[in-house]
Amino acid sequence: MLSTLEAAAPVSDAKGTVTVSEAQLQQFEQDGYVCVRGLFTDTEIAELRDTFMTTNQAGPVPGLSELRRIKVGGTDGEYDPADPLAFYPRMMHPHRHADKPVGPLSMRYMTHPKLAPLLAALFKEEPLAVQSMFYFKPPGARGQDLHQDNFYLKVKPGTCVAAWVAVDDVDEENGGMMCVPNTQSYPIQCPEISDPKLYFTTEHVEPPAGTKPEYVRMKAGDVLFFNGNVIHGSTPNVSTTRFRRSFICHYVPRSTAEMSHWYTAYTFDGQEIDVRVNQDGGPCGTPREASAPH
Image 1 (cartoon, rainbow, N blue to C red):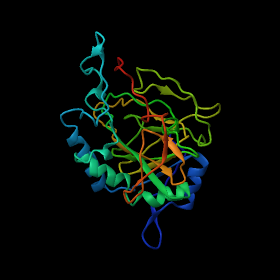
Image 2: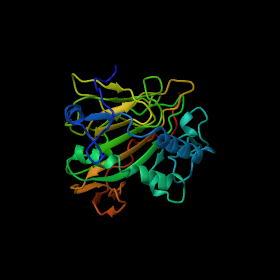
Image 3: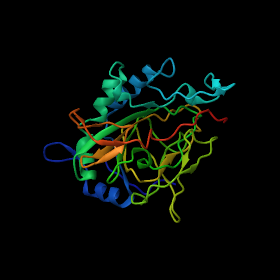
């Protein structure tokens, strides 16, 4: 089902700063997510796409790509050739890799001036950037089952907000995004185990009774913002030719008192901020130790 969300193109104030419209803010408060259409230009999206594709042109990059190996005789074996994500695993915290082209690029887009006023309006206070990720999701790749981001980020008090940048057009065929409306106040759940044939991560959160996930169809350059308690996920990419690439960042409010040790907070001018960490949490979506058969 297509989401009831009907987002508009970004709006600007008298100074030309991109802002959230009253309707968009109401949508976010009502459903827990809102899509801002055309926030990034074709040129900006091409820069993201081409830089990450070039970095991964020879396959996963040690220390940057999330490497998953099959076990052979109790030791690490080769990548499972049946899994499209073996060549195109997601890249975690690319902004931390200043020695690679994706490093400065990711830091620049994670703290992009177009995002700051939008996030400030959603948080109602200054946002801090804490994570960047790039998902390639090539044809045939599994999805990421329904989950809640603050299960991993452990933000206290309150929650995080994601900015999910579509690098390709996104729909049901190539494994589009789904959100469960009005779950922004739903408590963080203890996940069940997901189906390994359909999903590359292990967690599954069942939507509360009377709710169901809705697809959010997007064009490259659109940005989906969603609350860290919102149940969301994606389906497998069943297309034969289409990638579903995305650049995803997470943010917390300046008032955050504590978060998972997996994350580091930055202001939008690049200053690192000291936030107390706990030893809980981890990467956003726990990968399986071994590639499952398709």
